[in-house]
Length: 235
Image 1 (cartoon, rainbow, N blue to C red):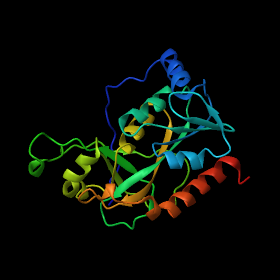
Image 2 (spheres, one colour):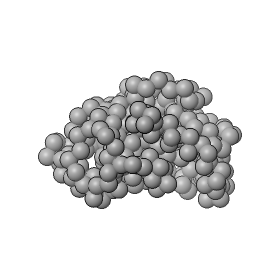
Image 3 (cartoon, rainbow, N blue to C red):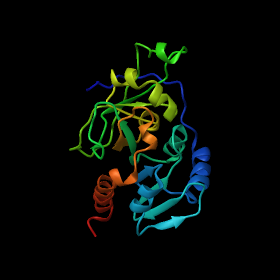
Image 4 (cartoon, rainbow, N blue to C red):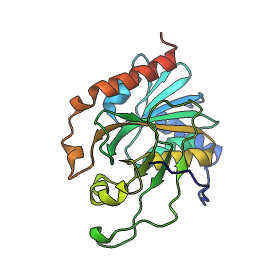
């Protein structure tokens, strides 16, 4: 399924530079001003991506590799704080996991073209609906993708992803907890953003909790190796 990203109007403001610098110093442990950043909420992925880097002592585990930073961010909305903290246009890659809504094989890596925040109207789970005017936030990274695209639905918690499964599957291809927040924040702050997601489960009946790391280990290893080679020039 494909959906064209639509222009959005957002009343949020990007923090000023004194706030951004304090955020960088606190979250990263340094006043980082590089051009490329990798974000992930998955500890094992961060460990793989940060191999050979120089660690900094911030709130969020951060490793520097040349001009790039690899950051272990929190799960969910808070991950976008570092997007707002960056001082200049930056290429950002988020690496995470997602539930497949269309029976994609577990271990498939995808690069959504757009994402929306799934905030249903109030009501019983069986009656929940989405607004007709969903805002789709677009991928903006300059690297041409050879991975499957599609649309990601970003939910607030894992319980929502289960309760909303059938409605999400009618309008999206994947479900996660970060993509739409990061894409929207990057657009506001003037950064180039993509979200690379490994399908870890099929988002039915809580199978996210029973999906073992071994099922996606090969896909995660291949993805991390490709990203590392891009960062280091294959060295």
